[in-house]
Length: 524
Image (cartoon, rainbow, N blue to C red):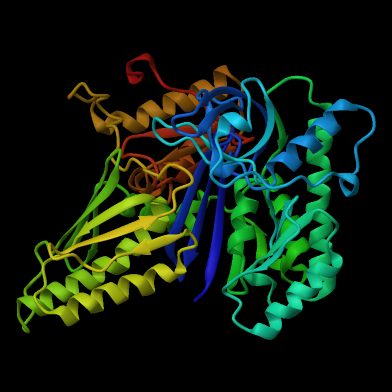
């Protein structure tokens, strides 16, 4: 299996697509002006204690106060708080971690009102983004994630990933980290650290320790609360950190700054593989070039077709996600209804596993498969689903089919499920039900080009239009595009864009900034 990462950087948002054997399996989209919240650390203030829930709400600068449960304070909470007080008490000289006092662990079944007070300052880390009506979820057990290691202050334990099966390797890694880690720090050794040399692990440990020092320095100097004291790496780099493996063939980026950021990170974790990071400079939009736009349009939405007319219906509710499997108009199998049901269900299991990763669906997922009479077929379906979900990095749990033919899946949810709207607004009637003559569309475009060139003095710009319209504009030896260039200058470029609806258009200047050329009648 080969994997490729394609990063599309636009002025307002950044989109990341992970392809496995040219099939889209993970897709993330984030607005450029939003910070990537999960993993961020804040010096916040306790706003309200909730003894009934044994929890509190903490102000970390979000619209809704964040939720912190007693069990998420962590055993070493008293040690943290004492150290934070010592750090804040002297704004000039940083109190060394090696001299920090380790206090007894907090009680496992204690009350939050005995540990925290309203108005108290606490360092917290976001573990779940705000989802629907809920604010962010917090923890006080801070962790700094790297490629091979996770650093946990005030822990002092070394844990090794259960996925490393060799007892000799586990013992080697444990002994190695015990010898190089500083006092009052714990380490979790990740699966990808298997077989790594001490120099590589030590180099990453130093980077993570530097992150901790920078964080605690920001805590020391913070004058206004809440204060962001540690910001997780960009979404692209964070995804690379967790996903990067030897099967990666290419990482394509269409923005120079993000390209440099990704290349620097790959140079840090795999110096011999920096050549896989490539800057995309093609004329077509990057997602169109790699066939991703079409896959996004066909994979999101309420109905998803997958095999010989069979399809899934995916509904999102506040409490759970519901998936219905339908055989559609496919022809019946010659082996009978049971074989037909099994075939459709196995295809649904393959597509559903992809959809869970693609949409990042979390919480409870209930799947209504087509009824099957034979127990061996139900077991085969359950095993197929478990096998498909092995590629999923999110924690999950799958139950066998119930007597009603339902499969229940729980999947870790740390951010809202991605829901891309695949229905397009009609760009020709703008909801009125009447359109201008479509044959005059190119005349309208020429008027806008004339305005840009002769009124605004713009010599270089790009026009994005639907591929069908682009085919019409480019047809013939003396095409319409060529006529425009002869009349208004050769700085005009016409690009087919699959993201646009039939008679929709967008103008971009030479710096890639969109030019608003809509007329008053086109604004809803």
